Amino acid sequence: MKEKEIRRKKTAAAARGRRRRRRKRVAMIERITVALLLIVVIVGGAALVWNLVPGIKISRHLEAANEFSQTEAYDEAIASCEEALKIDSKSVKAYRAMAGVYLDKEDRENAELVLYQGWETTQDEGLLQEYCTQLLNDAVSDINAQNCTMSTLKKCVMAVEKDPAGADGYKLLDACYSRLFATEETELFCNTNEDGVCGFEQYLDIMEQMISIYSVNPTEELKAEIVKFSVPQNDTLWIEVNHLQDYQSLLAQVDSLDDNGSIAGLSACIEKAVWAQEIFEPAFGIFESGEFAPIKEFMQSEEYISIRDQFIDGTMEYWDGKTYIPISREKMKLMRTDGQWKFSFADFEECPETAGVIKVWGTRQEDAGVPRICISYEPASVDGEYYPHTTYEFVYLYSNVKIAGEYVPQMNYRFETRVATNEGTTSKLIGDWGGEHEWTMEY
Image (cartoon, rainbow, N blue to C red; front, side, top):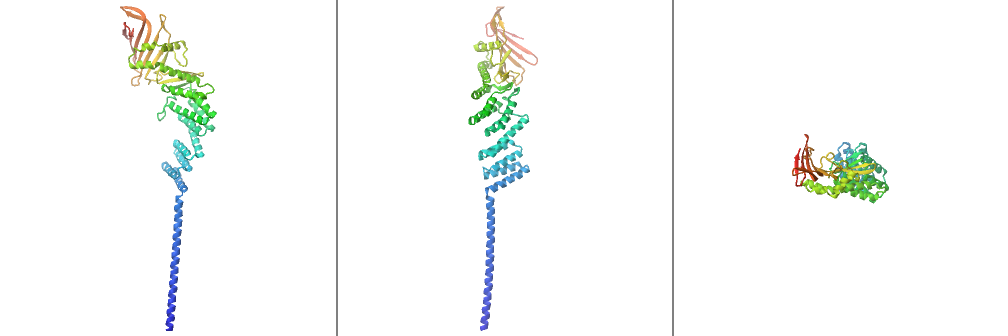
């Protein structure tokens, strides 16, 4: 019994040892498993946190944008930059990258817009300098390509606005002036851009911008540019009549900056043109009504006779004319000769699309010591074609009137209608027009 008990105890002890070793192995496995799980969790969490860092995500989007751009997938590159800006709307790198994509795409306009928006959002001076550089580079390209326009001038002014101390901006303003406002003849103010905006409206906007910049930062350089751009040096500058008063207002505004009196002559010239339009507005109304009788009173008015006499005597200031003086309401030209300004309204040859032209005839002619008074009117062309071309002419003169079979000299009105065609001219003449001895002749 004693031996059996000993064997049993030994067997039980061995079993207990095996169980202890088994438990140790399980515990070790559990510890290793937990450790491995902890490593996985730690590593995975770190990766997750790493991926959620805004700067890292922005860099990834910008790297993608660069790769897209290299393969000319520009839309995808821009979209990647936009995603970066959604993460951080003040990312200077994202704005610069997007501008770079647009430049790769040869879309300078949007590149400039992105740089400007970036500067507005971030106030980063580097973006501002890049924006100004792009504007000036564009202007240089236009000038070198002989394609200087109002848009070119606008870019230079925008660059000066953002960098008033930059000498390059003023140099390019001077270059624009010499190409736009110092030529022999230009219709710069009458042309329209690709958006249908009139050249003068562009010019007015630019001038107002320059004045606004000067009010905030009154430098002598900008002051000189404002005065210079107010007074073109073109030998002939065409302008639409409906812009005269706006131009007059601009010159009045700039006059306080003019230390040399260079504006006064041009301002007086435009004032005279505005005055002439006001004088002849009633006459246009009479002719367009088709009821011509009231023109007699206009012809006899003090203003009309004074205008006629000034042209005959050569004493008319600013208003240029010789044998006849046209008045129209669409276009006129400003002419500079030896520093002196004059103006002249367009006739049918100079503006075929005119709605009508009045002519003051300034040749001195007397009948029995009585000066003749003459005025004519040419209505708008039909369907844009010059022919048939109609002229209505009204003359107050001393001439023979047939009374009771005899010709009696007396003052009377003569009304002639001439219709010119490619084949020739036909006329209808009414003598003693509106008088009791009115007569008609056709030839």
